[in-house]
Length: 293
Image (tube, rainbow, N blue to C red; front, side, top):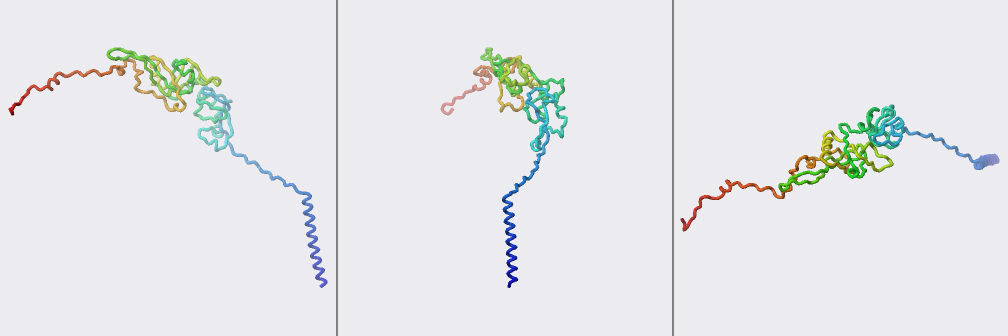
């Protein structure tokens, strides 16, 4: 009995010693809290590719220098557009485009497309480089009142009107009349005088000569029209500037002779009566019946 009590007391004492030690350890931890150390996270860099871009704003007709182009990092997704020049595939693109001519204006940071640059040598003029293959450059005089007060700029699209005095016959008499009609539609303006681009500080380009892009056939028509009368321009809006140049057919304004189709006779000439046919219509034998005879 006595040995049992001693055993119980020793067990209880050991448990109290363990509990006390745990209590003392917890107090020491609360008095000296440990600061959690931050976990270092390594930054993952996205994969990029170098794309050829314009390093400054460039206007139409400008000759490209090596400092005009450069490489800029793009993500593979954004550089997947067809036509972009990648440094991995075209390492000499800057050298290849040096001395080329800008065909379409570009802004700083814009990816370069082959369609916006004409690859020519130093001896080739800007005007020859700007021409569409198969087309011709033709010049003719204009003035402020025939060119929308100077608001027609290079790369605009216009209609060319011919105004002239024509002669025609009316009631047997020769009469003159002034007529005007469009002879060429949706024509691209290449230059006004010697300027192939618009000055940033000016909204208009007053000039005395317009240079347009036409096919060889339309160029001949324009030269003929210049001899026949006065030429003027009408500016087309951006919504109507698409498509090819059109030469409307059947324009009487281009006729060089008397316009018989514009006769002012109100009534057509009377058709002459055929005397033989008229005589055949009248009966020559007449029979009269009286009282049944």
